[in-house]
Amino acid sequence: MSIKEEMSKRRTFAIISHPDAGKTTLTEKLLLTGNLIRSAGTVKGKKSGKFATSDWMEIEKQRGISVTSSVMNFPYRDYQVNILDTPGHEDFSEDTYRTLTAVDSVVMIIDATKGIEAQTLKLFKVCKMRGIPIFTFINKMDREGRDPFELMEEIEDVLEIETYPMTWPAGMGKRFLGVFDRNHETFVRYTGNETEDVIPYKELENSQYAELTDDATYQESEEQLMLLDEAGENFDREKVMRGEQTPVFFGSALAPFGVEAFFDTFIDMAPEPAPRRSTEGVVSPDDPEFSGFIFKIQANMNPQHRDRVAFVRICSGKFERGMNVTLGRTGKTFKLAQSQQFVASSRGTVEEAYAGDIIGIYDPNVYRIGDTILTGKSVFEYDELPQFPPEEFKKVTAKNVMKSKQFKKGIEQLVQEGAIQLFKRYRFEDYILGAVGQLQYDVFEYRMKNEYNVEVDLQTLGERIPRWLNPEQVNEALFDERNMLVQDREGNPLVLFKNDFSLKWFKDNNPDIELIDLFEVN
Ligand code: GDP
Image 1: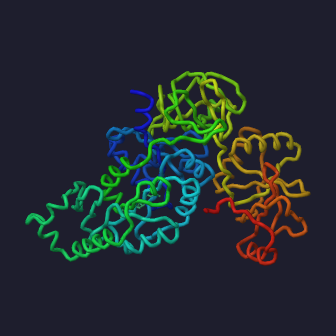
Image 2 (image 1 turned 45 degrees about the vertical axis):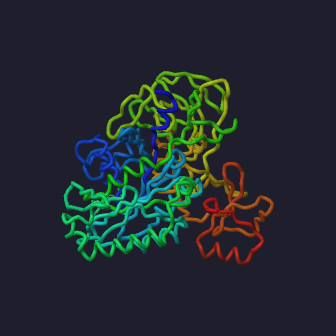
């Protein structure tokens, strides 16, 4: 098969949701449809007591969670599916955000009983900023949830994205009868067991289904569907591809119900790998030369070997085991000795891979997050990965002042690698760390001790609101301990505001000072 054919079969996506919305359950059902695992319960260690893709790192074992995003790869129909995990809750970190730079589309799960929750909103914003196509699965329809129209409205209002219900529910909870599948023009009847009755629209009037169509819940839903057909948005694939419209599906990951109806439509509609911008212009995914970028580095995966694995999103060409590649940043060429592709709970070796695939490569301490590796005469780098605003800040010092040399070296390297962000206060020698979640601090502390032999003290500054400043408007006199003026790694000035109130107060009193929110969606 040609590189172009291989590439066009790839579907690489992440599932975003708030904890408990059903991401694990849905992922398991998808793996089951792909016949990858025999029994559910192996995706996440928390419940089954077994670890999933990344049980190497000591800290992961202690916490019983997977620290960094894992990758699952399986064939489905004619497609090659790559699902990238986006860890949530206390394991939410910058890696979670960065994962979204390596996917071509996203599935957003919303709990029908709760609507949009905090973490979903954060992840959604990153997708919106990057124009990633988003498909919505409204889960837990087997429970008494919120009104479907109300949920649509909430998505439109809070997320500012058009919705197109691809399926529409008839009832919910105890009265859940199934969904209308507008794409396949069928009614998928909920039978309460694993088999789904798929009835074409035109057969619904048959006497065989008279009982169903006589049902008041069914009739109400059918009327709603007519209303949607007449007054609702039209389906617009172009808008979906630009991230301006989201197709919405209803179902229950647990039952399971509506999962296949969703996945079959999703997999056909979801985009294949897209061209990507680089310093040498746009690179096409079917370019014969191999290229990819590193979006995550996982350290100490095997404590015996102290090795690290860099996760590469392939953007063009064909990857082959043991090939020679050039590192875009330095122009140096070397051989990729070892590679691993991650499939559910086993760590298998990959012989070849194509644009859209994710591979893990052995990192002899040379890579940085955002690095490009490639073959061919032209040496380039893919666009830099965006910086994500941290939420939690801590002042860090070495417990033992005699170790300041290792301390500085450790911080320097971990920051360079992208494990955590470093800020320096104006005039002070303070080192301030910024992270998206607590996990990053745990990993930082652990690695400083294990890799650099330095114990650190972390003094919390709490959740702060970072706003970048126009360098020409920096006025030290305006800031203090509450609203702290710092510089990021590149020397850009920013303010760590104590809270919403301080931010608002500052804005009201200094209307001329421009405050830049890196997370603002235009
Ligand atoms: P995650 O935190 O998003 O990975 O959520 P899980 O998949 O672990 O699910 C959280 C809880 O919700 C578990 O107890 C699941 O059994 C339950 N759950 C998931 N999907 C459904 C569903 O469709 N219906 C119902 N009733 N419960 C569900």
